Image 1 (cartoon, rainbow, N blue to C red):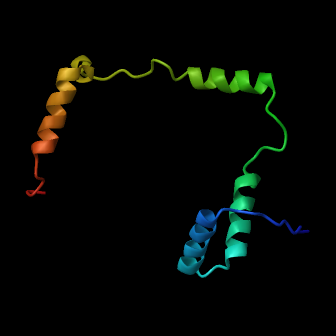
Image 2 (cartoon, one colour):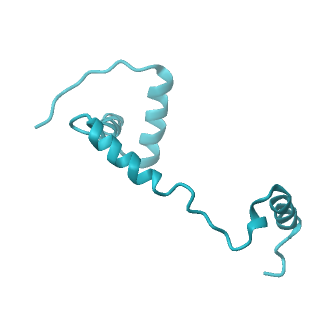
Length: 95
């Protein structure tokens, strides 16, 4: 089932929709409808409860501190700056 919705948008937004419409061959009203549908189909139907948030936070935090490089000095600023300078100077012509 579909519904009709009348919107008032700025000239700037309408011009952008018209440009995109011309580039894609999709009618401006259909293009706008598709964008609105995409935006609002990504919204969860119900708010996430606190327990679910805590479970997700705990899973995310398990990854904290897991970086263990082979070379401890590879994370210091001087080594990073040296690596960056070497890459910026490399023209990559030999590749």
